[in-house]
Image 1 (spheres, rainbow, N blue to C red):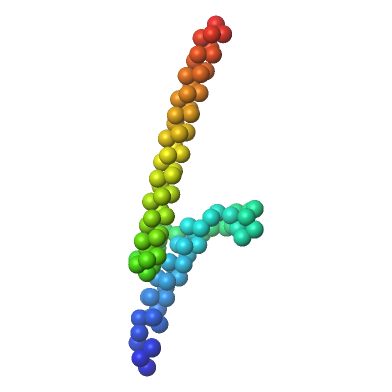
Image 2 (image 1 turned 180 degrees about the vertical axis):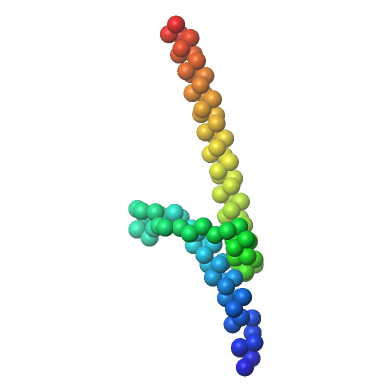
Length: 101
């Protein structure tokens, strides 16, 4: 049959599709549906994640890449602010130690 020979029924396509869905599930919020507890997460290897992204449709892949980019950007801002906070705390401790002595 025509459907049996199509790529939609091939085993490889199905496996890539499942991996893509796993990546999407992993990239969602850490919390469960109720929003209180963390749901158990399975970690995929880098190769599986890469294959899953390759199997995504073009629109979803573009959206996924934007999400990853924005997450990295936010994380870098947070880390920068944490470093600044630590530096300010150190300076305040030194000033406090100098005034106490």
